[in-house]
Image 1 (cartoon, one colour):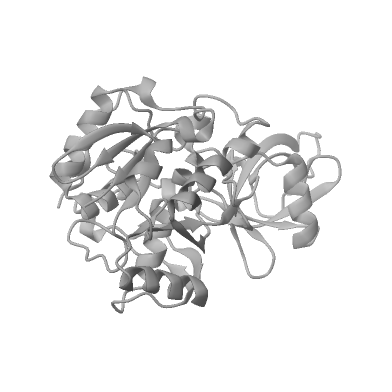
Image 2 (cartoon, rainbow, N blue to C red):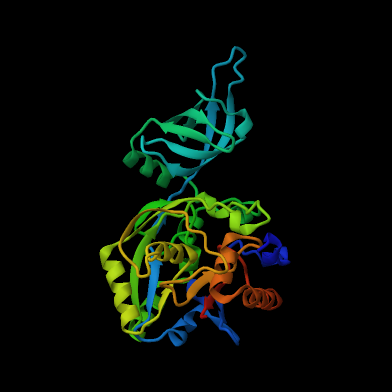
Length: 348
């Protein structure tokens, strides 16, 4: 299974830089084994059945992108320089692993100021990131991030425009609860309150799980044999109640359909023994063609990057040839791609 098996041509103008408004007005491509149907997200009330269960990721994206000034003692006074950080992982001692720019000019021991009165010290430097120790505790830092941080937009959006105040709403799900993600579970961005109410009236059930999406979700696959790719780890939790409700839906003949690849990866991690059980730990599960699904009966997801692990995941669910046909259709029909783009409902 080669990386080139998951490549396709994507016109640059199909990369969405803003979401549809309202959220649920986005287009939705419904993919089944023998048909492809062009619809909109509000049509979920027609495609989902009473007794089906949607699994939602309730992680909350933190405004993890910070503009700062590096301060370093120098004789000529040249030790101040602008820099930029994106927090990617909270460490047990309260420090944060962060992507820094310009990384080559950052040194261990440098002090960084953010805003008027927030400081941090670079305590470690690796090949691709640094460790920042902030001069405030976690609760204070969360307030700082809410006040001066920006949403960590994916590279394919950030390269086209800077994040702004609107992204603090646009890049957050309406049910976000547990802070810790540095990327949004983007399929969930299509849901608004009227759609949730309509689905509840239809008899669709909901369960919430938590997977803190990390920056590693954007890392490219660098090996030609995709089966040798090593996935990044992300922390997740499936509560006992969520596991019980999902098992009951399966037993009653309803379909379990995760909203987003993050929710799917987590529930399949929790079901490696054959049925879903409570789970609270990191997962680095890599789903590619040949994977056996124990829980998911479908998936609501966005359109993914060429040669990405997420394209491999949807290919595992629907078959590689079928997904490549579906993506050819999406390009031909002008569907909008990636985090702020349109949706697909995959029903194998």
